Image 1 (tube, rainbow, N blue to C red):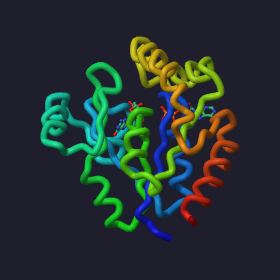
Image 2: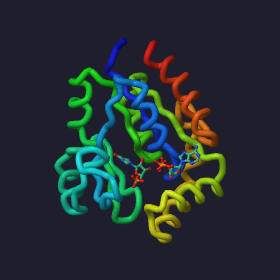
Image 3: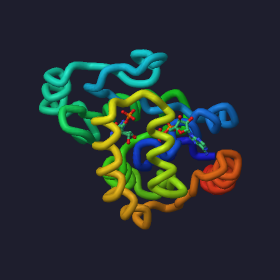
Length: 189
Ligand code: ADP
Ligand code: 5GP
């Protein structure tokens, strides 16, 4: 197997991509998560250097100007997220498959960069109503942040056809089984 591969997960916030990636990581020893840099504050339970590299907004902009990022987006006003170029070499040098959890624009940009070396997966919520329920039940965002995330979702959902595969995350186990099928095929080709 050629390990210089990448798997990209994109979806509107609350669709369940972080949950799916965590489950898949238990199954695939070859997976290594690309740790993005962000200017948002850590959520309870999140750790610097594990979930994200947490940096200030000013540091983020300085690093972006220095060209440290392969791609970055101000996903929500004042909240920047980006893929550090150093992550790619770090993970490939470990002989691992890079796993990305990025917003929809980031997913499209990374797919353009990696081409056939990447499998791009769009995680689709069963409906906007369920997406809203999941965002609320996660309990990590303020009402204002939930509203921002939902208004962006409507635009993001239209981008699903740009991805290699769309997986509907209604029943979690079904979604994981579908992901395993396409990932096995991709890793063995
Ligand atoms: P994302 O990373 O796409 O923003 P998360 O993985 O954080 O989304 O999931 C959002 C919330 O929905 C979490 O509370 C998670 O436990 C829940 N969730 C994820 N998938 C499912 C599912 N298939 N059914 C019910 N709840 C789910
Ligand atoms: P959250 O705040 O919920 O962790 O992430 C918000 C959004 O930012 C999600 O859609 C997530 O996938 C996206 N995101 C995380 N890291 C990156 C990144 O490096 N680049 C881009 N473009 N988006 C990212």
